[in-house]
Amino acid sequence: MDDAEDDVTQAIAAELQLMDPRVRASRERAARLLDPEFVEVGGSGRRWTYEAMLAELPDHQGSSEQGPRYEPSGFSGVVLAPGLVHLTFETRLGDVRTRHSSIWRRTDPVAGWRMYYHQATRVPAGVV
Image (cartoon, rainbow, N blue to C red; front, side, top):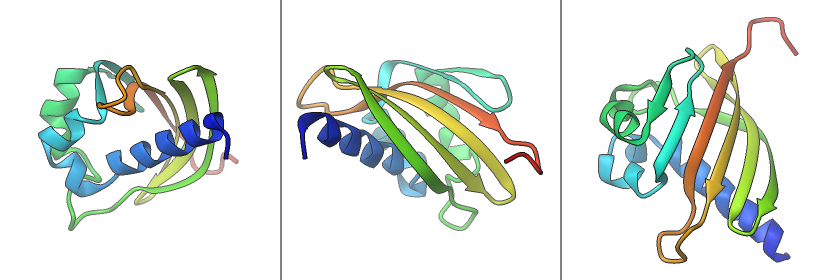
């Protein structure tokens, strides 16, 4: 595996961690995976910042061990520059299908990969 493939693999592993209800329910664990400059445009159109996401993530769907869990598929990734990976994929959470785009960056070898940007778009029923 070359360095680019390894970077994409590590970014995917970090993305999957963020879908784990135990991580989503823990501000401390989620904070290790979100970049301090994190921004998200959610499926609802809401803009999320690092602090807002950490404050509300435990209350989002997919954050409870007893509730529905994210079912990811179709991961694709590309290295945009050293330490910068763009991922695309889909998820299902219950009956909701969503397409995702995220940018992961590694600014510090100790901190590892952190999500810098995320965009989610709900896919209407019947759309391929």
